[in-house]
Image (cartoon, rainbow, N blue to C red):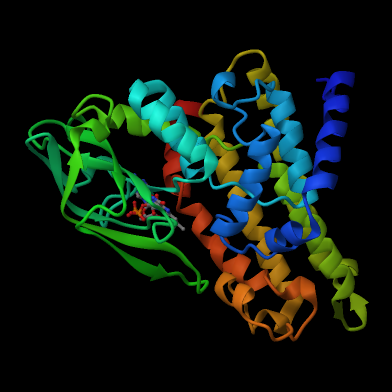
Length: 400
Ligand SMILES: Cc1cc2nc3c(=O)[nH]c(=O)nc-3n(C[C@H](O)[C@H](O)[C@H](O)COP(=O)(O)OP(=O)(O)OC[C@H]3O[C@@H](n4cnc5c(N)ncnc54)[C@H](O)[C@@H]3O)c2cc1C
C-alpha cells in the first residue's frame, strides 16, 4: 500500500498551515487546550466557527452553493491532521455536521433556506433530543409523545443527557406519533425552538463536575407541523441517517497521537526514585502498547480514506474504529493520571478553569488531567455504547 500524499496534497497542507499560523491565535489555542469536555465551550467554538466561515472552511461536506468546500477525502484528512496538531478548537457538530446533512436530504426548501444560513452564522445553536430515561441503546422504545392539534403537535415527555441544551436555542427531537405498530414505525422528527412555552431544562452535573448534559422536559409544547422533517411516523429513517454522521467521525488517530506526545512529555518530567517515569520498563511497556494500537488505528483509517477516495463508505468497520479509539483514549488518560500523581487530586473542571483567578498549584500539564480522565469515561457510552458496537461488529463485520 502506498500511503504517500501527492504533491498537490502537500501544497494544500502548506496552505492549511499558513492559515493556522495566521488565524489560530495563542489565546484560541490556550482556551482549546483547557477544554476538558466532549464539546468545546460554546463561546470558544463560536469564535473559531466565525473565523472558519470567513475563510469558507467551516462546513466542508456541505454542497458548494451552501458554503461547502468540495475537498477530497484526503484533503479533509489533511485539515483534520493539521488542525489537531496545531491544537485548534473543535466546532460543535450538532447543527453543522449532524442536522445539516439531514436537512439537505429530507428538509423542505423552506426549512433549508431558513435553518442552514442561521446555523452557519451561529445565530442558531442546536441540541439533540434523542435519548430518554429508559431509551438509549434501545432508542426506538422512546415515549415522548406528539399529538396532532389543528396545525400543530402538542408534545409531552422528557429527553435525557441532552448535551448543551442549556446553550441551545433549538432542539431536533424524536417523538412518538403512533404506538399501534412496530416501535420504529411510529416515530417523527421535529425541529423545536427552545423558547417555546412548556420547555424546561434541568442541568445534570457529571462525575467530572461539568455541566455539559441536561434533562429537557416538554409539557404541552406546541410545535407547528411545518417543523416536521420528513413524513409523519417515518422519523426513524431520518434519525438513522443522522446517526451515520454522529458516528462516522474518523481521524481519531491524529488526536490520540497528540495526546500520546503530551503523555510522553509528562512522563519525562515526572520522576519515580529519581528516574523519569518514561525510563521505567513497566510504564514504557504500557505506553508502547498504546502507541502501537494508535499506529494500527491510523493505518486502518488511511485504508478507509483510500476506499472513500474511490467512492466507498466507511461501512460497519467504523464501529471497530470507535471502540479502538475509545479504548486507547481511556488508556492514555489513565496513564496521564497515574503520571501526574498527587497533582491529579485538586482537579479543575471546565467551570472552574474558566472562572478562577488563583494560579494552579502544580505543573501546567497536570491542570486538566483528572477532568479529562473522568470526562472520557463517557466516550464508551455516547454515540453508541461499546457493547452495542460489539454487537454491530459481530453481525456486520464477522457475520456471526
Ligand atoms: C456525555 C454524554 C452525552 C450525551 N449526549 C446526548 C445528546 O446530546 N443527545 C441524546 O439524545 N443523547 C445523548 N447521550 C445519550 C447516549 O446516547 C446514551 O447514553 C447511550 O445511547 C446509551 O443509552 P443509555 O444511557 O440509556 O444506556 P443503556 O442503553 O440503558 O445501556 C446500559 C448498559 O447496557 C448495555 N447494553 C444496552 N443494550 C445492549 C445490548 N443490546 N447488548 C449488549 N449490551 C447492551 C450498554 O452497553 C450499557 O453498558 C449522551 C450520553 C452521554 C454519556
